[in-house]
Amino acid sequence: MIDQAIALVQKTLEGAEAGHDWFHIERVWKLSTHIAQQHPEANAEVVALGALLHDIADAKFHNGDEQLGPQIASQFLQEHGATPELIDQVVYIIRNISFKNRNEVSHYPIELQIVQDADRLDAIGAIGIARTFNFGGYKNNPMYDPKQEPRTDMNKEVYKKSNGTTINHFYEKLLLLKDMMHTETARKLAEERHQLMLTFLDAFYKEWNVAL
Ligand code: ADP
Ligand code: NI
Image (cartoon, rainbow, N blue to C red; front, side):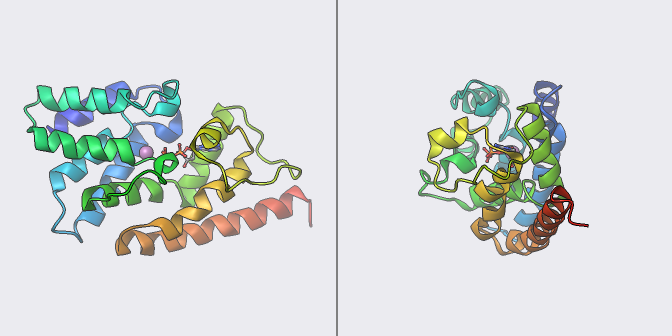
């Protein structure tokens, strides 16, 4: 089933925005597997399928439709003989992994904790910086505007519509992630990636201001 899921994701995400393409999925899958090794209580099949299918139809690329991803995933799982329990566990991850839903999720099974940590690790550090500028470019957002303040009080609807600057996205999301990790393994990995973003931001402002 894992091989079939890989094939489905590779085909579905052909031509996707580079921050949400097959290679993002592959990194999240590898990171999830790594974290899961420290958690024998986690169901490895749920973790792998959750990681592989978590962005199969990300709502922000489908007119905000949050049902499509769960739908495609459960149909795929059903067709490949998954038990109703396995389908429920994987779909639960897909429905609840997103940063924008963070205030609505009350129950975090270990498998969701692991895949969410992995997805968040891929949102920070060098890859996180690259993905964020790629997404900002894809949206034609400004890189930076000294007059625009970051907004950390955005509710889900405002966050989804936000077309603020890419630099502001660091304050609105990326720099918050280090303290939101569930697992010890991810918390440790997040530390270095977080520092790298701080160093990057310092250098960015210095060069922006042509402070020679
Ligand atoms: P999730 O994948 O948890 O739903 P988001 O949709 O907030 O999270 O973002 C996924 C990634 O897309 C971010 O980590 C970032 O790289 C990029 N991204 C999302 N929104 C923006 C934005 N407004 N500006 C720049 N990058 C963004
Ligand atoms: Ni993702």
